[in-house]
Length: 363
Image (cartoon, rainbow, N blue to C red; front, side, top):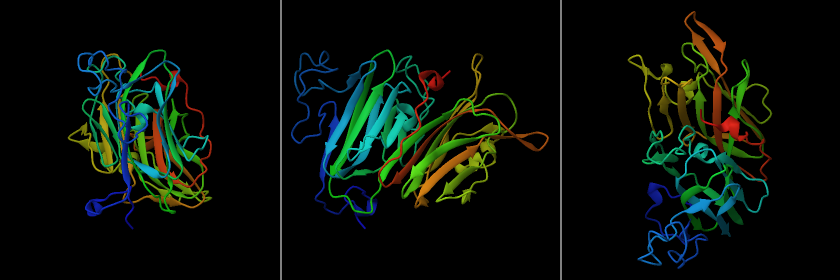
């Protein structure tokens, strides 16, 4: 069935009654005939000889401790894409609220939401680490242009906030593109949740997602690992999906690199080989330099052709398991950060508290 907010290539030629809107610092409420009217903003000095309509307000400076309401949309419709730039890092937390809920359905450090946990430009826009993420649902492009293409329907309202948990100003550029249209009864609500184990206790599983209550489907995982200690291959851990009252997983994978659509340690010619694809990849790899203690990896897996359905509840875990030269598996104690992406019916169950700033530091 064709829905106005989910445009496939086959439906691109079909006319629609949906109304296209976009929220940015130049049109903060996405109203028709209301863009490029600012007389003050972060670009006012640069546009001083040109005036209104000439990039006077291209971004927003989020003050220390401020929670900035980036978007507030009233009515029925769906967010279709988002672009963000400027500050990239974990000091800013993004939250999304559907249909007036007090509980956010999305709560993540900003860089982790865009599957770019190790990317930060706190030291300077042109000096920070960067590697491109090129996938169907999230793209991080030069120079740290963060893009999201998850469809996010709502029936009454949508609200997006950015909380600056740092002690300095964070400048954010943003564009939220959406459609005002009817939402079909069967459409569920987008969710994303961040979790961290720093480090994971030896012998325990890292929990990617738990506490979900309702009907829905799981659509993606972003995972970032910082290795602690030496050893051979670290990624023997299985991803497990427990659904609808499972005591044992209904879905159990064969290893970390396999879940992310690779194989055999990502080893090509004796070296790890990063890769991007539509639905899975290991796109970031950092080997230690003289003063770095950890090798770091960034991975993603989008369950677009193969969403994982549940009717009552869902729990997702991964083992932190290494393989050693004597042919034995041994649990590890690595740093693991994950974001789970899924759709479900409301209400959204409360999320566990976010880690403190020290736990989220990139060291």
